[in-house]
Length: 264
Image 1 (cartoon, rainbow, N blue to C red):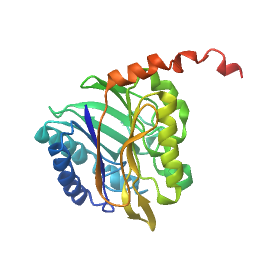
Image 2 (cartoon, helix red, strand yellow):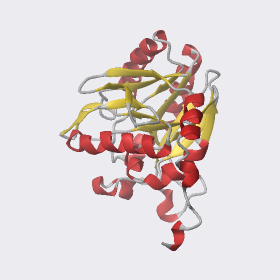
Image 3 (cartoon, rainbow, N blue to C red):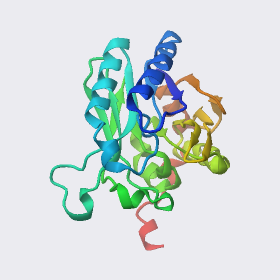
Image 4 (cartoon, rainbow, N blue to C red):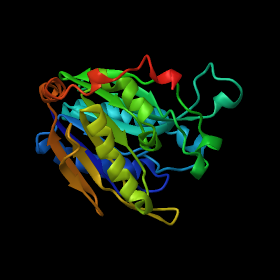
């Protein structure tokens, strides 16, 4: 499967403008053969703490993603803020930072809510964390999504590694921590022995520059494609059979002793 990360400069809290920018890149990516397109975290608004305002755009963002997937006959995933679930109560009633992936028929294939709100930036005060880590099979490739700060928590990747060929990591990761972003993407690929597609934004937000450094890494943590500093499309092939071959030749995951770890 050919995948593409769409590295965008996001317009602050302007969904329609971000739809326009993403549409242009999406069309170019599909022309290059991409079958799965991935947009950054909260691509429609930027990483804003105006949670209720951003969540109000959730339905039209979902509709736009579904329509784009249908019109381009590919899979399309992107991040956005969404309202709290109807049954949420108390502090859990805050909006969520979410990611949704739609198929060529416009039907949602994967829905994920960021498990770890970024407390350092105050995200935990405005958004509640999710509680599930779903995986979907897309054209024979098992896909699991996490969001930005989740990258710092290897427990998530360990929990899903055996059922995953490709981790998607949409993000708004600032330039001042770009070394950590690139290092952690490689580490998660190496330790999970699978592909990782990190899709970050570029441009400034609240005075913070973003380099992008979006990349597709293979099961050895080697970048098959990458881009920095400016809007770009990161394109490469993901092969579930390659993941299986690597894990068979180097059975590191099979050597884990999970029954022991809770006692340590």
